[in-house]
Image 1 (cartoon, rainbow over the protein chains, first blue to last red):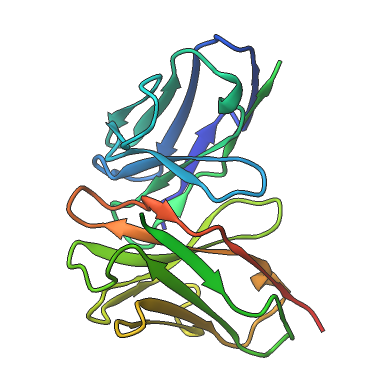
Image 2 (cartoon, rainbow over the protein chains, first blue to last red):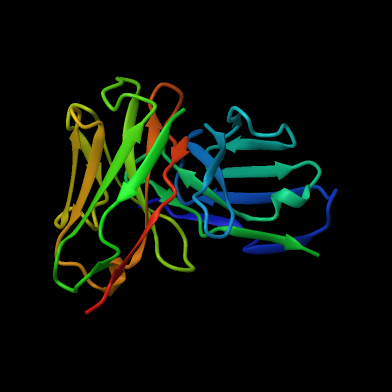
Length: 107
Length: 121
């Protein structure tokens, strides 16, 4: 199975900060990478697919980059509603696997 | 507007069978541009992909679950299902169903709210 490693596991930030989360795959996955946001007690919501495509309805402050094994999710200016846990997922090969998650909370 | 709703028992005894159904509304499960998937999340932990099914019945399943897992589709009822046999406490999780577009990369673009299944005697 392809292992997905996110860093950091958690971070504290303030409203307006720029935040970046990285995701590293244990093998080459091309651009088969998605990012999700999950709030407590809720289902995950898709933010980014194919590494850098913004899902319809997602604010433009979210962006994704990378290919191969190294990927980044960036939030350009953190908003109060962005405090949540973020997961990456590789869909290049089965079995699909997720990163362990990055919790973003208020500093 | 697409909606997915998981249904099934919230409590299953060890060694018994877990059965869940995802009812799809607002879209046809027979659409050729989508697969339909299951994901689970143990309490306080990360996400685990379980498997996907196409309207034709083609499935992809997690190898670690494959011997216990059946994923099926019922196009007449516009729903798909998951059956997991011989469950243990390790199968306790929130189970989500989701839609998988296949024309723009693979990912889960719409999710059900999830249903908690507890395995306990």
